[in-house]
Length: 146
Image (cartoon, rainbow, N blue to C red; front, top):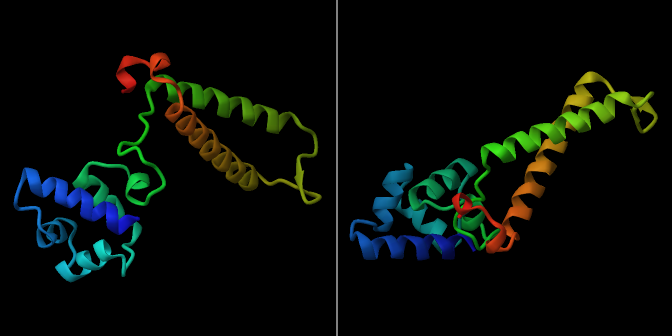
């Protein structure tokens, strides 16, 4: 999927600006042309740093490049969303610390384990927020989210 999307995006850009050759894109992301060509052909997978650079070059999300989403742009997290996430995370932390003898497989959780759990929970909350935003009907979305 990555290769197909890279080729499609580059060809779209090339229609607007003829300089968007494989060599030009390769130069932008700091790899050899043959390396970039192998990305488009699907014979080689780029490292995550390169996927990030490609997403920047083509102004799309990394999820779109990798075929994980059909939406070219990542869901925008607003300031209100950030506040809601922080509020949810505080509630989760409070719930975790109120429980006497919080343990995992019979062993009490250390502070480090609790922090790790909180990081995982934040990732889950953010992913859920992003996924839910994607499926909110347009008539219920804020104008600025579009």
